[in-house]
Length: 410
Ligand code: CTP
Image (cartoon, rainbow, N blue to C red; front, top):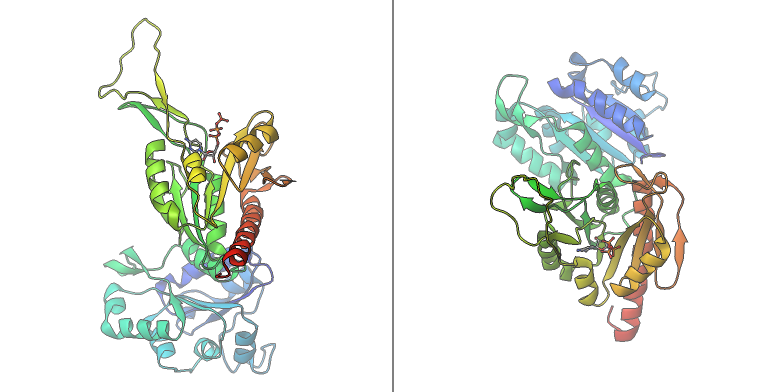
Protein backbone atom coordinates (compact mmCIF):
# COMPACT_ATOMS: atom_id res chain seq x y z
CA UNK A 1 0.00 0.00 0.00
CA UNK A 2 3.02 2.32 0.28
CA UNK A 3 4.60 1.65 -3.11
CA UNK A 4 6.30 4.80 -4.39
CA UNK A 5 6.11 6.55 -0.99
CA UNK A 6 9.18 7.85 0.82
CA UNK A 7 9.00 7.70 4.60
CA UNK A 8 11.38 9.25 7.11
CA UNK A 9 11.52 7.22 10.30
CA UNK A 10 13.04 9.16 13.20
CA UNK A 11 14.34 7.07 16.10
CA UNK A 12 15.24 8.78 19.36
CA UNK A 13 16.74 7.64 22.67
CA UNK A 14 14.15 5.44 24.32
CA UNK A 15 14.43 1.77 25.28
CA UNK A 16 11.63 1.20 22.73
CA UNK A 17 14.13 2.14 19.97
CA UNK A 18 14.64 -1.56 19.24
CA UNK A 19 10.92 -1.84 18.37
CA UNK A 20 11.44 0.72 15.60
CA UNK A 21 13.21 -2.06 13.70
CA UNK A 22 9.88 -3.90 13.47
CA UNK A 23 8.23 -0.73 12.23
CA UNK A 24 10.94 -0.21 9.59
CA UNK A 25 10.46 -3.80 8.47
CA UNK A 26 6.64 -3.44 8.34
CA UNK A 27 6.99 -0.30 6.20
CA UNK A 28 9.41 -2.04 3.82
CA UNK A 29 6.92 -4.92 3.49
CA UNK A 30 4.37 -2.32 2.32
CA UNK A 31 6.97 -1.35 -0.34
CA UNK A 32 7.80 2.06 1.16
CA UNK A 33 11.24 3.61 0.60
CA UNK A 34 12.27 4.02 4.25
CA UNK A 35 15.03 6.38 5.42
CA UNK A 36 15.90 6.15 9.10
CA UNK A 37 17.33 9.07 11.05
CA UNK A 38 18.75 8.28 14.49
CA UNK A 39 19.74 10.53 17.36
CA UNK A 40 23.04 9.92 19.20
CA UNK A 41 21.09 8.56 22.18
CA UNK A 42 19.12 6.15 19.98
CA UNK A 43 22.43 4.60 18.92
CA UNK A 44 22.99 3.60 22.57
CA UNK A 45 20.03 1.22 22.19
CA UNK A 46 20.24 -0.06 18.60
CA UNK A 47 22.77 0.29 15.78
CA UNK A 48 22.34 2.04 12.42
CA UNK A 49 23.39 -1.25 10.80
CA UNK A 50 20.07 -2.85 11.85
CA UNK A 51 18.07 -0.20 9.99
CA UNK A 52 20.43 -0.13 7.00
CA UNK A 53 20.02 -3.89 6.61
CA UNK A 54 16.22 -3.71 6.92
CA UNK A 55 15.67 -0.69 4.65
CA UNK A 56 18.57 -0.92 2.18
CA UNK A 57 19.19 2.80 2.76
CA UNK A 58 21.96 4.61 4.60
CA UNK A 59 20.91 5.50 8.12
CA UNK A 60 21.31 9.24 8.73
CA UNK A 61 22.93 10.09 12.05
CA UNK A 62 25.23 13.06 11.54
CA UNK A 63 24.28 16.44 10.01
CA UNK A 64 27.92 17.02 9.01
CA UNK A 65 28.58 13.58 7.48
CA UNK A 66 30.51 14.30 4.24
CA UNK A 67 29.60 10.86 2.91
CA UNK A 68 25.90 11.71 2.56
CA UNK A 69 24.44 11.49 -0.95
CA UNK A 70 23.36 15.16 -0.94
CA UNK A 71 25.38 18.20 0.14
CA UNK A 72 22.56 19.46 2.41
CA UNK A 73 21.19 16.09 3.34
CA UNK A 74 18.70 17.17 6.03
CA UNK A 75 16.97 19.52 3.57
CA UNK A 76 17.04 16.94 0.78
CA UNK A 77 15.63 14.22 3.07
CA UNK A 78 12.83 16.54 4.26
CA UNK A 79 11.96 17.54 0.67
CA UNK A 80 11.58 14.00 -0.67
CA UNK A 81 9.48 12.65 2.23
CA UNK A 82 5.80 11.81 1.78
CA UNK A 83 5.50 11.35 5.54
CA UNK A 84 7.75 11.57 8.60
CA UNK A 85 7.22 9.56 11.76
CA UNK A 86 9.24 9.69 14.97
CA UNK A 87 8.83 6.37 16.76
CA UNK A 88 9.78 6.17 19.55
CA UNK A 89 9.92 9.85 20.51
CA UNK A 90 11.71 10.69 23.75
CA UNK A 91 10.74 13.62 26.02
CA UNK A 92 13.89 15.35 24.75
CA UNK A 93 13.04 15.23 21.03
CA UNK A 94 9.47 16.35 21.81
CA UNK A 95 10.80 19.33 23.74
CA UNK A 96 13.25 20.23 20.98
CA UNK A 97 10.63 20.06 18.21
CA UNK A 98 8.07 21.98 20.25
CA UNK A 99 10.54 24.85 20.65
CA UNK A 100 12.23 24.78 17.26
CA UNK A 101 15.61 23.56 18.47
CA UNK A 102 17.61 22.08 15.63
CA UNK A 103 20.97 20.72 16.75
CA UNK A 104 21.24 17.27 15.18
CA UNK A 105 20.21 15.38 12.04
CA UNK A 106 16.72 14.40 13.30
CA UNK A 107 15.69 17.81 14.68
CA UNK A 108 17.05 19.78 11.69
CA UNK A 109 15.33 17.47 9.20
CA UNK A 110 11.99 17.57 11.04
CA UNK A 111 12.06 21.35 11.15
CA UNK A 112 12.40 21.38 7.36
CA UNK A 113 9.56 18.87 6.71
CA UNK A 114 6.30 20.03 5.14
CA UNK A 115 4.82 16.52 4.75
CA UNK A 116 2.39 14.85 7.23
CA UNK A 117 4.13 14.39 10.61
CA UNK A 118 3.44 11.63 13.13
CA UNK A 119 4.99 11.18 16.54
CA UNK A 120 4.79 8.18 18.90
CA UNK A 121 6.05 9.19 22.38
CA UNK A 122 7.45 6.34 24.52
CA UNK A 123 8.95 6.96 27.95
CA UNK A 124 8.41 6.52 31.69
CA UNK A 125 4.86 7.42 32.79
CA UNK A 126 5.95 10.24 35.11
CA UNK A 127 8.12 11.74 32.36
CA UNK A 128 5.21 11.50 29.90
CA UNK A 129 2.65 12.91 32.31
CA UNK A 130 4.91 15.75 33.45
CA UNK A 131 3.22 19.07 32.58
CA UNK A 132 6.27 20.08 30.51
CA UNK A 133 5.95 17.02 28.24
CA UNK A 134 2.16 17.40 28.05
CA UNK A 135 2.57 21.07 27.12
CA UNK A 136 5.15 20.16 24.45
CA UNK A 137 2.76 17.57 23.04
CA UNK A 138 0.01 20.20 22.81
CA UNK A 139 2.39 22.56 21.02
CA UNK A 140 3.38 19.80 18.58
CA UNK A 141 -0.31 19.15 17.85
CA UNK A 142 -0.79 22.86 17.20
CA UNK A 143 2.09 22.67 14.71
CA UNK A 144 0.26 19.88 12.88
CA UNK A 145 1.91 16.79 14.39
CA UNK A 146 -0.43 13.83 14.83
CA UNK A 147 0.35 12.24 18.18
CA UNK A 148 -0.05 8.48 18.53
CA UNK A 149 -0.83 8.13 22.23
CA UNK A 150 1.46 5.73 24.09
CA UNK A 151 -0.12 2.54 25.39
CA UNK A 152 -0.68 1.69 29.05
CA UNK A 153 1.19 -1.25 30.57
CA UNK A 154 4.32 -2.43 32.31
CA UNK A 155 7.29 -0.28 31.29
CA UNK A 156 10.92 -1.31 30.96
CA UNK A 157 11.80 0.60 34.15
CA UNK A 158 9.37 -1.59 36.13
CA UNK A 159 6.67 1.08 36.54
CA UNK A 160 3.17 0.50 35.19
CA UNK A 161 1.25 3.24 33.41
CA UNK A 162 1.00 5.21 30.16
CA UNK A 163 4.21 5.44 28.18
CA UNK A 164 4.55 2.14 26.30
CA UNK A 165 5.43 2.09 22.61
CA UNK A 166 2.15 1.37 20.77
CA UNK A 167 1.70 -1.81 18.73
CA UNK A 168 3.61 -1.56 15.44
CA UNK A 169 0.43 -2.56 13.58
CA UNK A 170 -1.35 0.49 15.06
CA UNK A 171 1.44 2.89 14.06
CA UNK A 172 1.38 1.35 10.59
CA UNK A 173 -2.38 1.90 10.35
CA UNK A 174 -1.88 5.59 11.32
CA UNK A 175 0.66 5.91 8.50
CA UNK A 176 -1.53 4.10 5.97
CA UNK A 177 -4.51 6.27 6.88
CA UNK A 178 -2.51 9.41 6.14
CA UNK A 179 -0.89 8.49 2.81
CA UNK A 180 -1.76 5.03 1.45
CA UNK A 181 -4.87 5.90 -0.58
CA UNK A 182 -6.36 9.10 -2.02
CA UNK A 183 -8.96 10.55 0.38
CA UNK A 184 -11.80 10.60 -2.15
CA UNK A 185 -14.38 9.58 0.49
CA UNK A 186 -13.59 12.43 2.90
CA UNK A 187 -16.85 13.67 4.43
CA UNK A 188 -18.80 10.57 3.35
CA UNK A 189 -20.57 8.58 6.08
CA UNK A 190 -20.56 4.85 5.46
CA UNK A 191 -22.18 2.09 7.50
CA UNK A 192 -21.01 -1.48 6.87
CA UNK A 193 -22.43 -4.66 8.38
CA UNK A 194 -20.25 -7.77 8.63
CA UNK A 195 -20.08 -11.29 9.95
CA UNK A 196 -22.72 -13.80 10.97
CA UNK A 197 -25.64 -13.48 13.35
CA UNK A 198 -26.30 -15.97 16.14
CA UNK A 199 -29.80 -17.02 17.13
CA UNK A 200 -30.09 -18.70 20.52
CA UNK A 201 -31.83 -22.04 21.00
CA UNK A 202 -31.08 -22.35 24.71
CA UNK A 203 -28.36 -21.01 27.04
CA UNK A 204 -25.71 -23.23 25.43
CA UNK A 205 -26.67 -23.56 21.75
CA UNK A 206 -27.30 -21.27 18.83
CA UNK A 207 -27.90 -21.25 15.06
CA UNK A 208 -25.33 -19.40 12.96
CA UNK A 209 -23.50 -19.61 9.61
CA UNK A 210 -19.95 -19.79 8.26
CA UNK A 211 -19.42 -16.05 7.67
CA UNK A 212 -15.95 -14.90 8.87
CA UNK A 213 -16.69 -11.18 8.48
CA UNK A 214 -13.55 -10.71 6.34
CA UNK A 215 -15.35 -9.07 3.37
CA UNK A 216 -17.21 -6.53 5.53
CA UNK A 217 -14.11 -5.74 7.58
CA UNK A 218 -12.09 -5.22 4.39
CA UNK A 219 -14.74 -2.78 3.11
CA UNK A 220 -14.77 -0.88 6.42
CA UNK A 221 -10.96 -0.62 6.48
CA UNK A 222 -10.55 0.50 2.86
CA UNK A 223 -13.36 3.07 3.27
CA UNK A 224 -11.58 4.38 6.39
CA UNK A 225 -8.23 4.56 4.55
CA UNK A 226 -10.00 6.55 1.81
CA UNK A 227 -11.11 9.11 4.40
CA UNK A 228 -14.73 8.04 5.03
CA UNK A 229 -16.37 8.21 8.45
CA UNK A 230 -17.09 4.53 8.97
CA UNK A 231 -19.41 2.63 11.32
CA UNK A 232 -19.08 -1.14 11.36
CA UNK A 233 -21.94 -3.18 12.80
CA UNK A 234 -20.42 -6.59 13.31
CA UNK A 235 -21.55 -10.03 14.33
CA UNK A 236 -19.31 -12.19 16.53
CA UNK A 237 -16.09 -12.76 14.56
CA UNK A 238 -12.48 -13.50 15.46
CA UNK A 239 -11.11 -10.44 13.64
CA UNK A 240 -9.64 -7.47 15.53
CA UNK A 241 -11.63 -4.23 15.45
CA UNK A 242 -10.25 -1.96 12.71
CA UNK A 243 -8.71 1.26 14.10
CA UNK A 244 -10.42 4.58 13.27
CA UNK A 245 -13.74 2.79 12.67
CA UNK A 246 -16.65 2.94 15.10
CA UNK A 247 -17.36 -0.74 15.69
CA UNK A 248 -20.65 -1.91 17.19
CA UNK A 249 -20.77 -5.59 18.12
CA UNK A 250 -24.11 -7.42 17.84
CA UNK A 251 -25.24 -11.01 18.27
CA UNK A 252 -28.66 -11.67 16.72
CA UNK A 253 -30.66 -10.39 13.73
CA UNK A 254 -32.93 -8.32 15.98
CA UNK A 255 -29.99 -6.50 17.54
CA UNK A 256 -28.49 -5.92 14.09
CA UNK A 257 -31.81 -4.43 12.94
CA UNK A 258 -31.94 -2.08 15.95
CA UNK A 259 -28.31 -0.93 15.71
CA UNK A 260 -28.44 -0.39 11.94
CA UNK A 261 -31.82 1.32 11.71
CA UNK A 262 -31.05 3.80 14.48
CA UNK A 263 -27.93 4.91 12.58
CA UNK A 264 -29.20 4.60 9.02
CA UNK A 265 -30.81 8.06 8.52
CA UNK A 266 -27.46 9.87 8.77
CA UNK A 267 -25.55 7.55 6.40
CA UNK A 268 -24.60 8.39 2.82
CA UNK A 269 -23.79 4.79 1.91
CA UNK A 270 -24.94 1.56 3.60
CA UNK A 271 -23.28 -1.73 2.67
CA UNK A 272 -24.90 -4.86 4.09
CA UNK A 273 -22.23 -7.55 3.93
CA UNK A 274 -23.44 -9.36 7.07
CA UNK A 275 -24.79 -12.89 6.70
CA UNK A 276 -28.00 -12.40 8.64
CA UNK A 277 -30.09 -15.34 9.77
CA UNK A 278 -33.45 -15.45 7.99
CA UNK A 279 -34.98 -17.52 10.81
CA UNK A 280 -34.58 -17.86 14.57
CA UNK A 281 -36.10 -20.24 17.12
CA UNK A 282 -39.62 -18.99 17.87
CA UNK A 283 -38.95 -19.43 21.59
CA UNK A 284 -35.64 -19.58 23.44
CA UNK A 285 -35.49 -22.05 26.29
CA UNK A 286 -34.31 -20.60 29.62
CA UNK A 287 -32.90 -23.99 30.55
CA UNK A 288 -30.58 -26.26 28.62
CA UNK A 289 -32.58 -28.65 26.43
CA UNK A 290 -31.85 -32.28 27.32
CA UNK A 291 -31.94 -35.11 24.81
CA UNK A 292 -34.54 -37.86 24.65
CA UNK A 293 -34.92 -40.80 22.26
CA UNK A 294 -37.44 -38.83 20.17
CA UNK A 295 -36.56 -36.67 17.16
CA UNK A 296 -36.47 -32.99 17.97
CA UNK A 297 -38.16 -30.23 15.96
CA UNK A 298 -37.50 -26.58 16.59
CA UNK A 299 -40.07 -24.08 15.33
CA UNK A 300 -38.36 -21.19 13.54
CA UNK A 301 -39.81 -17.75 12.90
CA UNK A 302 -38.69 -15.12 10.41
CA UNK A 303 -36.20 -12.51 11.57
CA UNK A 304 -36.42 -8.81 10.77
CA UNK A 305 -35.09 -8.19 7.24
CA UNK A 306 -32.95 -5.12 7.85
CA UNK A 307 -32.03 -4.59 4.21
CA UNK A 308 -35.66 -4.76 3.11
CA UNK A 309 -36.54 -2.16 5.76
CA UNK A 310 -33.68 0.10 4.65
CA UNK A 311 -34.77 -0.19 1.00
CA UNK A 312 -38.40 0.59 1.90
CA UNK A 313 -37.34 3.63 3.99
CA UNK A 314 -34.40 4.87 1.94
CA UNK A 315 -33.62 8.53 2.49
CA UNK A 316 -33.20 10.67 -0.62
CA UNK A 317 -29.71 10.58 -2.04
CA UNK A 318 -28.67 7.57 0.06
CA UNK A 319 -26.88 4.66 -1.61
CA UNK A 320 -27.86 1.16 -0.53
CA UNK A 321 -25.81 -1.93 -1.33
CA UNK A 322 -26.72 -5.52 -0.48
CA UNK A 323 -24.86 -8.78 -0.76
CA UNK A 324 -26.11 -12.01 -2.27
CA UNK A 325 -24.27 -15.20 -1.51
CA UNK A 326 -25.57 -17.94 -3.74
CA UNK A 327 -24.80 -21.50 -4.78
CA UNK A 328 -26.72 -21.46 -8.11
CA UNK A 329 -28.52 -19.02 -10.47
CA UNK A 330 -26.43 -16.30 -8.88
CA UNK A 331 -27.20 -13.43 -11.25
CA UNK A 332 -30.93 -14.09 -11.52
CA UNK A 333 -31.38 -14.42 -7.77
CA UNK A 334 -29.22 -11.40 -7.02
CA UNK A 335 -31.10 -9.26 -9.55
CA UNK A 336 -34.41 -10.30 -7.95
CA UNK A 337 -33.08 -9.21 -4.51
CA UNK A 338 -31.87 -5.92 -5.99
CA UNK A 339 -35.40 -5.12 -7.20
CA UNK A 340 -37.26 -6.53 -4.18
CA UNK A 341 -35.16 -4.60 -1.65
CA UNK A 342 -34.93 -1.36 -3.72
CA UNK A 343 -31.12 -1.44 -3.80
CA UNK A 344 -28.74 0.68 -5.85
CA UNK A 345 -26.25 -2.15 -6.15
CA UNK A 346 -25.94 -5.78 -5.15
CA UNK A 347 -22.67 -7.56 -4.79
CA UNK A 348 -23.09 -11.23 -5.69
CA UNK A 349 -20.79 -14.18 -5.22
CA UNK A 350 -21.12 -17.90 -5.69
CA UNK A 351 -19.66 -19.72 -2.68
CA UNK A 352 -19.01 -22.78 -4.83
CA UNK A 353 -16.53 -20.86 -7.00
CA UNK A 354 -12.90 -21.40 -5.97
CA UNK A 355 -11.58 -18.41 -4.00
CA UNK A 356 -15.08 -17.03 -3.29
CA UNK A 357 -16.03 -19.22 -0.32
CA UNK A 358 -16.21 -18.62 3.41
CA UNK A 359 -13.20 -17.59 5.47
CA UNK A 360 -10.76 -17.06 2.57
CA UNK A 361 -8.91 -13.79 1.88
CA UNK A 362 -10.09 -13.61 -1.75
CA UNK A 363 -13.42 -13.17 -3.49
CA UNK A 364 -14.93 -13.28 -6.97
CA UNK A 365 -17.72 -10.71 -7.05
CA UNK A 366 -20.24 -9.52 -9.58
CA UNK A 367 -21.65 -6.03 -9.06
CA UNK A 368 -25.20 -5.70 -10.34
CA UNK A 369 -27.09 -2.41 -10.60
CA UNK A 370 -30.52 -1.80 -12.13
CA UNK A 371 -28.75 -0.90 -15.39
CA UNK A 372 -25.59 -2.99 -15.63
CA UNK A 373 -23.59 -6.01 -14.51
CA UNK A 374 -19.86 -5.92 -13.83
CA UNK A 375 -18.00 -9.19 -13.23
CA UNK A 376 -14.69 -8.93 -11.41
CA UNK A 377 -11.88 -11.50 -11.47
CA UNK A 378 -10.51 -13.35 -8.45
CA UNK A 379 -8.85 -10.77 -6.20
CA UNK A 380 -8.14 -10.12 -2.51
CA UNK A 381 -11.10 -9.00 -0.42
CA UNK A 382 -9.38 -5.62 0.07
CA UNK A 383 -9.03 -5.18 -3.71
CA UNK A 384 -12.67 -6.21 -4.18
CA UNK A 385 -13.62 -3.71 -1.45
CA UNK A 386 -11.79 -0.98 -3.39
CA UNK A 387 -13.70 -1.78 -6.61
CA UNK A 388 -17.02 -1.87 -4.74
CA UNK A 389 -16.34 1.49 -3.06
CA UNK A 390 -15.35 3.03 -6.45
CA UNK A 391 -18.72 1.93 -7.85
CA UNK A 392 -20.71 3.13 -4.82
CA UNK A 393 -18.88 6.47 -4.74
CA UNK A 394 -19.79 6.96 -8.43
CA UNK A 395 -23.47 6.20 -7.69
CA UNK A 396 -23.40 8.67 -4.77
CA UNK A 397 -21.90 11.36 -7.04
CA UNK A 398 -24.58 10.73 -9.70
CA UNK A 399 -27.33 10.98 -7.06
CA UNK A 400 -25.90 14.19 -5.64
CA UNK A 401 -25.63 15.66 -9.13
CA UNK A 402 -29.20 14.64 -9.97
CA UNK A 403 -30.41 15.97 -6.58
CA UNK A 404 -28.58 19.24 -7.25
CA UNK A 405 -30.13 19.54 -10.71
CA UNK A 406 -33.61 18.93 -9.33
CA UNK A 407 -33.39 21.22 -6.32
CA UNK A 408 -30.61 23.53 -7.48
CA UNK A 409 -29.33 23.41 -3.90
CA UNK A 410 -26.37 20.98 -3.72
N1 CTP B 1 -30.26 -9.35 5.06
C1 CTP B 1 -30.76 -8.54 6.08
N2 CTP B 1 -31.61 -9.05 7.02
C2 CTP B 1 -31.99 -10.33 6.97
C3 CTP B 1 -31.52 -11.16 5.95
C4 CTP B 1 -30.64 -10.64 5.00
O1 CTP B 1 -30.40 -7.35 6.11
N3 CTP B 1 -32.82 -10.80 7.90
C5 CTP B 1 -29.38 -8.77 4.03
C6 CTP B 1 -27.97 -9.34 4.03
O2 CTP B 1 -27.10 -8.58 4.84
C7 CTP B 1 -27.60 -9.27 2.57
C8 CTP B 1 -28.91 -9.48 1.85
O3 CTP B 1 -29.92 -9.10 2.78
O4 CTP B 1 -27.12 -7.99 2.21
C9 CTP B 1 -29.15 -10.90 1.44
O5 CTP B 1 -30.43 -10.97 0.87
P1 CTP B 1 -31.48 -12.13 1.19
O6 CTP B 1 -32.62 -12.03 0.24
O7 CTP B 1 -31.93 -12.15 2.58
O8 CTP B 1 -30.63 -13.34 0.88
P2 CTP B 1 -30.55 -14.64 1.69
O9 CTP B 1 -30.46 -14.35 3.15
O10 CTP B 1 -29.46 -15.41 1.09
O11 CTP B 1 -31.97 -15.27 1.45
P3 CTP B 1 -32.61 -16.15 0.25
O12 CTP B 1 -32.85 -17.40 0.95
O13 CTP B 1 -33.82 -15.38 -0.10
O14 CTP B 1 -31.62 -16.21 -0.85
